[in-house]
Amino acid sequence: MREKIVTSNVSDQIGEYKKSGRNMIFIFLFSVVVFFIGASSNLIPLTLIGIAAAIGSGVMFVRNSKHGEIYRHGHKGEMLLRQELHRLLADDYIAYFGYPLKDGGDIDCILLGPSGLYVIETKHHNGSTQYSDGGWR
Image 1 (tube, rainbow, N blue to C red):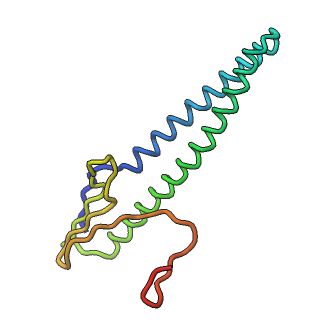
Image 2 (cartoon, rainbow, N blue to C red):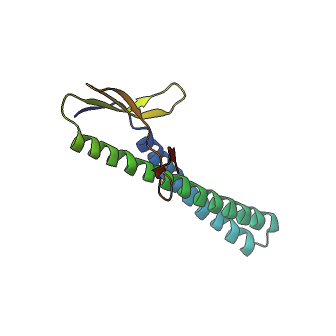
Image 3 (cartoon, rainbow, N blue to C red):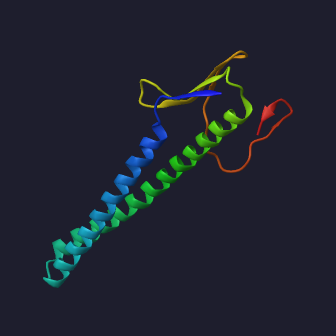
């Protein structure tokens, strides 16, 4: 199989989450400094601002980490798809990975070959998927 990598939306998202995570750590550390300055100076409003900022940035960091983990799993799935297609298909197939859409997303894989045109979208789900009795579970 021949391949063309058009874009990697998932890789871009992972990079954004890493950058955002670093920013949240900086904000958290800054808010801890604000808290200690407020507490040591008996400035209650500054102390409360430090506490609120620390809690808010901590919550955002945890949320950011969870979303980033989902994208990392998605990226792993896309890499497994690419490996399997290379293993299974001859060179008369061509795969376009990361075909961009107008809304900012992308199609994970468009596969073109002698047997037709296929659009493949990989997903990250916990558990297993099975086909039986004419349906997916």
